[in-house]
Amino acid sequence: MSWGTYYKYDGYLSHIGKRDIDSKREECESINDMMWREILAYMAMTPPAYAKDDEGHEYPWPEFIAMKLREFRDEIEDNARLIARLDDCEEAMRDNPDNVTEG
Image (tube, rainbow, N blue to C red):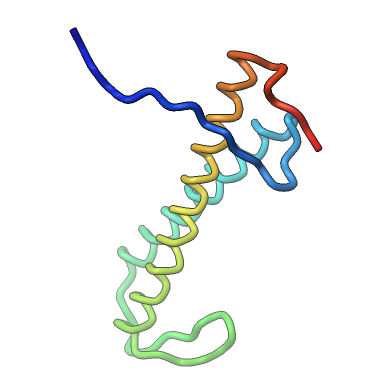
């Protein structure tokens, strides 16, 4: 006999309507894919001695790439968490649509 933990998720998706769940998931997945492609491009390039950030500040390459990867990781993780919440909401709508309301 198997065992595990059952739980009931009760959540809120700010500024996301029920009809927007699929498009929001696609948007998050698309952004994550774009960031992974950019990470791969950074890995494939010959690194310069210095690089500029979006605001024009110049940094030594190792410091710049570490900062960029932290930014990418944080955004990818945020998107992954939102995708999981979107999946939870979609599952709740499938299981019992009356429990999912907008407001």
